[in-house]
Image 1 (spheres, rainbow, N blue to C red):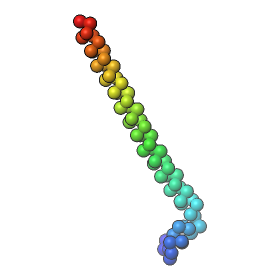
Image 2 (cartoon, one colour):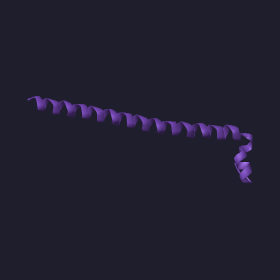
Image 3 (cartoon, rainbow, N blue to C red):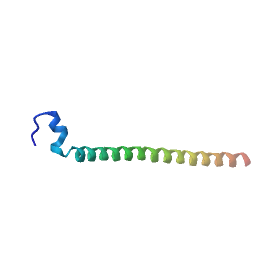
Image 4 (spheres, helix red, strand yellow):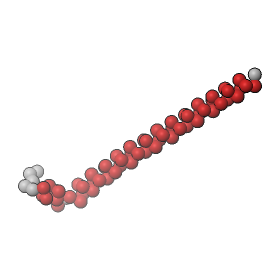
Length: 66
């Protein structure tokens, strides 16, 4: 396709709502995926930190009793 102006490019030959709408959906889903991965990573790191803390607390507690 050849466009003679930016206005024609953004109009996409009358299909602009479909083209730009689909791009908006794709970028929205990509952003949701990135945010979801960050949330999961943070939750996993917090869970592991709690497990390590519990393990070190149990180890320290057992040494004091011996």
